[in-house]
Length: 469
Image (cartoon, one colour):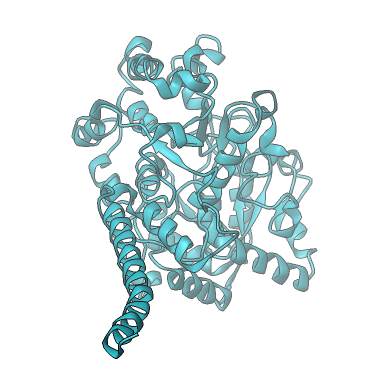
């Protein structure tokens, strides 16, 4: 073979593998470009999920599968009359919810707080106890496993502001007006293919009030509240409330009341835990609230009398004409400086004060099991003795028990252990600021979402009572 031909043959042999290498590299670059282009084209509400999927594929986390498998959530795009219009019309409800517009601002968190007991802290707001409708909706929008494909969703969120709608028509309206929005919602849902797929069993809704407020006809001659939870069309849905009326054996399940603390970062949570762990507890016990003189079942008057008689007890009054208990800073100062926080039932069994107190590292003292033990199964330990004290209400009512004497019987080491358990629970009792993102800390929203998804995944015949399994 001539030298020139041999050289050409050798060159061709070398160039062929080089060509394949270059082609393979170009194909890899093109694939990466198309994937990035697909991620960038996802609407803003879904970028969190897309980013998490890309990250999982890139780092080989888990078993290499979809980290959102079985966890996708689809949000119904409800007409604005069911949510946004309710917020925009907040001024019209001022005679029934004073200051509603301010209370539902900042994604439902209310006005920012600073100074006093909260000096140097971030994430504190004057949050209304019934503002969860907006707070939860804002958090769902940032959920990491959203999908715009309803057929791929494990659960469907219905962003109807049932609690806010309740407040708009609670007084001065007949029952037809109170139920109008709920019936309208039921008709709207029934026309959707997502609803027909499972009869609403995979749908959930947050109504940030007590379950009693949405079961009017369960009581004879009742004129309070709406019938949302009793409408046959929505009987299969899961409802999240701040106090359940069915003790977890119905379709309304309890999640914590919103507190004043809405952390923005993991460090906000850790710094606050460090602060309350090292707080000076000047008061042995404390109480924030008002008496219920017209309720023969209430033990608040007895609890308040005992507190006033003890130099080791401090209370903030909330009676008509006083405003002590309406300043969040004053409340948190007292709770941070108390060892035990007394939680006698008020208008209902549960109290928002319970969660404010625990967020301050104060050990709650309950007088009725329904105040916590039969309510917040997802968020509080099964063994209630690890974080709280129980004193039967009847013992206090009869005058046979001194609350302080009972608490003094608890050894100091046991008190320290209970307080540490309360402090560990803080993250799962607060709702993070929906405009930010916690990295590793699971908050009350995350715990609730886990519970909802587990319940919906249960067979229909096992959903009732699954809250307690």
